Image (cartoon, rainbow, N blue to C red; front, side, top):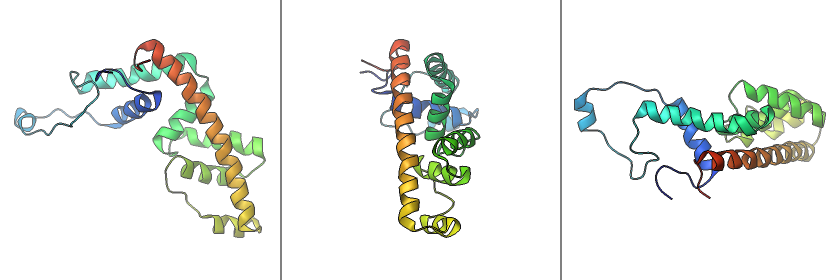
Length: 168
């Protein structure tokens, strides 16, 4: 494995999301002289614009093989559940499991490593049920999200192996 290929689709997508969200600033040469470099950096020979283009290429490779919902799952997971697509995903899962969309959105934020807006105690008071019931509902939502993420990563892995971003 070299610095131009990733060991897994997870690493490639996480890198692409970070690259896409980092602003590109033109800096003076004095700044470049004092710039700290990472111990290991993916694609070290590329400049910031080329890395952004590579990140876009990673997402385009994924879009060619994954369904729209799989892309929504990946975007939501890797951006922390705070993007506008998270509402679409929460609505879909809420309809499938017959749960409140806002509850599903809150569980989705926790699943995507973001802080939920409310805890289980708050949800149990809102629905007037025991906390264990809300925990069971939460488990159902997380299980559904995990299955969807696994299917999405499988499709993304296949696409990124074909494009040469992930080593075999």
